[in-house]
Every structure is written in structure tokens, then in C-alpha cells.
Image (cartoon, rainbow, N blue to C red; front, side, top):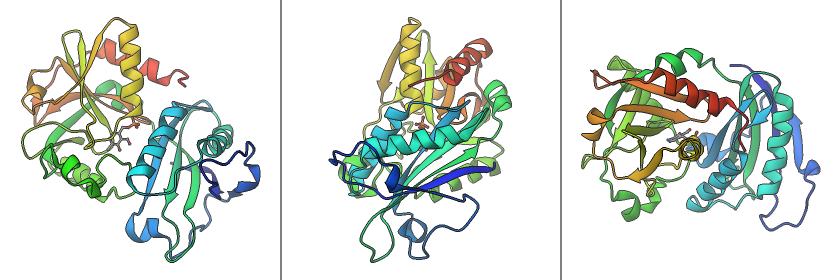
Amino acid sequence: MAWIFALTIDPVAADSADADFADTFAVIDPAAPALSVGELSTQRGDGIFESIGVVDGHAQEVTAHLERLAHSARICDLPAPHLGQWRQAVEMAAAASGPGESVIKLILSRGVEHGPAPTAWVTVATASDFTAVRRDGIRVVTLDRGYALDVPARAPWLLLGAKTLSYAVNMAAIREAKRRGADDAIFTTSDGFVLEAPTASLILRRGDTFVTPAPNGGILHGTTQLSLFAHLEQRGYATAYETVPVADLSTADAAWLVSSVRLAAPITAVDRAAMPVDAELTASINEYLLSPRD
Ligand code: PLP
């Protein structure tokens, strides 16, 4: 991964009538230090982010990402982002990204300790090459997330439906999966339901129906899953949001982890039990996900 571009944003109010935000952006050297030591994003992980896939200069599903940024801001009591301002920042970032696959990150932090305003910035970096993993797939293990399915409603301060910067637990889960000889993890609830992966959504295939765990506050609503469901429906398949018991993993006809940059990775094994892979369908799904999507 190499840094390509970065800019800082001076956030305007969400209801600002401005249409041109050029004077609220400052292009910075992505390799140079840029944050204050008082930054609450680094001190406490107190902020939110989005990772947008970019293919040959086209930023994918920008509206869905901006809407999720606003949703995360609401959950975290952060000032609502001005979507027009962020969209313009994404356009500048995409224009700087060049050919091939890259990733645009949007970050909105609570700001500097005792400071008056949130801090916001956007980066572009080259994406890793996921060609092999999209074709050959991943082995996953199920890992207990440690709470029951009804916790998001009972304890909203856990911020479970927000894409916060506090990803230490997610990264620890991936390390644990690797210690267990797998590539990735699927979080489960303590009462036996499937949630999501640490950085991806889960999609199962049952016959001609594609199922994903309902984003009922405990998991992120994935932009890739949303886009893929619309595509599958156009192809005549049924789609469904369900409460998925862990046992359903072993009876699925196929399964994928999907996310904005890695795209669709077919699951080849769950807890060491082999899972069928439909190579042709997976290739066509990734072809769709690599095509320009708005
Ligand atoms: N769930 C979690 C916890 C994630 O971190 C991500 C992506 O980073 C996703 C799901 C998939 O979301 P998207 O498809 O928007 O990348």
C-alpha cells in the first residue's frame, strides 16, 4: 500500500447553503505528519470513518458511504457531516487516484482535546491486490462477540451500528482467526446468531435466495452487500435480511464475505468444515463489483 493523496477538511454545518467548498480543503503531503498530539481519534479512537473502493478513478457507491457516515455521526453524537462538502472531497480524492484499484478513506474525529471543532480528513492509497483471494477464497472461524442479539437496543452507548475508529477488537479477531489457521472471522452472538466479519458483511446462498444477517443495530449495513443484493435481484434471485442462527452456516449452499475494497471473497471453510464454492458465480459477482457503481 502506498499513500497517493490527502486533504484536510474544515467541516461546515450540515445545513450550510454553500455549494463550493474548495476553500475548506487543504491538500497535504500524505507522507508528512499532520495531526495534533491532542487528537481524540488517536488518543481514544473517538471518531468515525468510511473506506470507499476506487476502480480506475471511479469511487464506488459514494452516496451509500456518505449516508453511512452521517448515520455513524448520529449514533456517536458527532456533528452531522455536510454531504455536499464530503462529496466534493471524495471527487478530489478520486481524481488523484489514478488507474487500478485504490481506497479512499473518510475520517471524522471528535477533534483535538479541549478543542472547539471536529477534525476531518480524506486519504487515498493504493489497494492491496485481492485478485487471488477473490478467486481462491478464504477460510473463516466463528468467534463469539460476547453479547446477545438484543444488546444493541439495550445498550446503544456501545455504538454497535456505527463505523467507529475503534477497530482494535476487529483487528484482534482477525489475528485470532490466523492463530487458528484461518484467514478471517465471523462474529457470532453469545445466544448463537451470526453477525458479520471484522471488516466485511456475510452473505449466504440458500438455493436461489441470498441471505444476510439483518442490520438491526448490532452490525454495519454494508454498502457492498446492499449493492450486490440489488444486482442479484436484477438477475432474478431472491434476497432476504434474516436473523441467522450459527447452524445455518453449515447448511448454506455457498457463502461470501463482501466489503468495499476486497469485494467478494468466497468462503471455502467454516471452522475447518469445507464449504462449497461456486467459482463461476463468484467471478461474475466480482466482475459486477469492479464495474462502475454509483
Ligand atoms: N462490517 C464491518 C464491521 C466492516 O468494517 C465493513 C467494512 O469495512 C463491512 C461490514 C462491509 O461494509 P462495506 O461493504 O460498506 O465495505
